[in-house]
Amino acid sequence: MALIAILISLVVERLLGSMEELRQFDWFYAYHRRVAPRLAQLKWLNSPLGALLLLLPLIAPVVAIDYYLSGTWLLFGLAFAVFILLFCFGPRDLEAEVEAFVDARSRGDEESACWHASELLGGEEVRCSAEVTQRIMQNIFVEANERLLAIVFWFVVLGPGGALLYRLSSLLQQQQAERAEGVYEAGVRLHYLLVWLPARLCAIAYAMAGSFVEAVNGWREVDSGWSESSRLILIASGFGALRIEPGEIEDDSRACDQVNEAISMVRRAVLVFLSLVALFTLSGWMN
Image 1: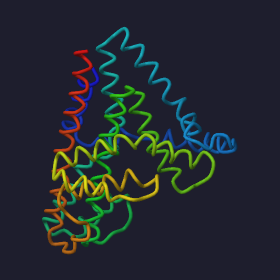
Image 2: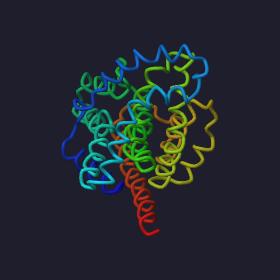
Image 3: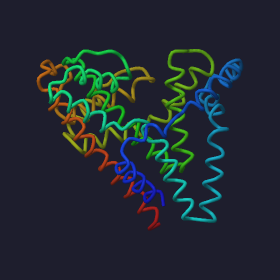
């Protein structure tokens, strides 16, 4: 049923377009502001366990509902799984953002292109340049995993509760990355543990969707601290799969072509990743 839920959710996502307005997490931010300071006072929670305890009251109802529906009304269980997946994807549509940037650059609308580039890069002010093109490509390689593939991975492993766990851990990491004490650092560590395996599977998908040798070589050259390793592996394998050295992006005149190459490779990698999920799921059915 996991594979069917994933396929249905991806089709619905594509047909309905951007669903950002439905993926509001103000309730989570309010909960975080209320509960996190209390947990931060407990020194023994300075570990991923502390962050997990912070998220547990939000995830437990989803696990309970999924368990009940899957055991009684299978069709309702499938609908619930699709709903959770659609809620956890994104929250913004990466392909739509990239296409908007490329369209603006193609029309010569630099103001609009810079605005879309800013949206892709987290809202910071930018001026279109070769450096910005490189950063957009880096963002594509990282966000494809963050917005979609890691969600799919944890859904397959732990069901709807796993998909929600990863989405909330990602939000938690974004909220707590600036603070490095107690349970705040624990949020960053929890996200690192959850992203470790799907990021490497995503890097393998990049390699299979592009130049395998260059992607693997780029991966092997990554040397960083634990908190940045997954991100840098995704970037290195993504550029390697395209046979592009980041330092070679010097001329912004090819920005549209290079960004299109990046998003096209990511689309192929998504198909590779889903094929691996399908193979894993079907082998489970056969056993």
